[in-house]
Image (cartoon, rainbow, N blue to C red):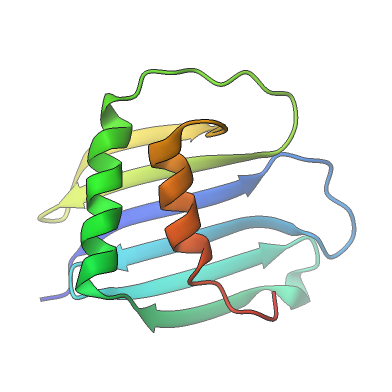
Length: 123
C-alpha cells in the first residue's frame, strides 16, 4: 500500500533572482517511491520527477528524522535556506518541524544530503 511517510520542503530564503529556485518538495511514500517538485522564480522552469529509493536509504531517512526530533538547537541566520519536515503514520501527521535553518545540525544535514542526492542533475 502506498501511504505518505514524509513530506519535506527546502525553501530558498535568500534573495531570489530571475530563474532561481524558490523551493523543492519531496514526498516520500512507504512503498519507497518519491515525488519531487522543483519550483523556480520563472514558472515555465518548474519541474516534477519521480524516483524510487532503496530500503536502506529509507531507513536512514527515518533514523535521521528520529534524531532530528530530539534536537532542540535553534540556528540563528539571516540568509540561506530553510527546511520543513512533516512525518506521517497511517495517513496522520505525527510530527512537524516548521521551516527553519538546519546549519550545523547533523541529523537535518544528513536528511538534506540524502534528499538532494535524488535531484535531477540538470537542475
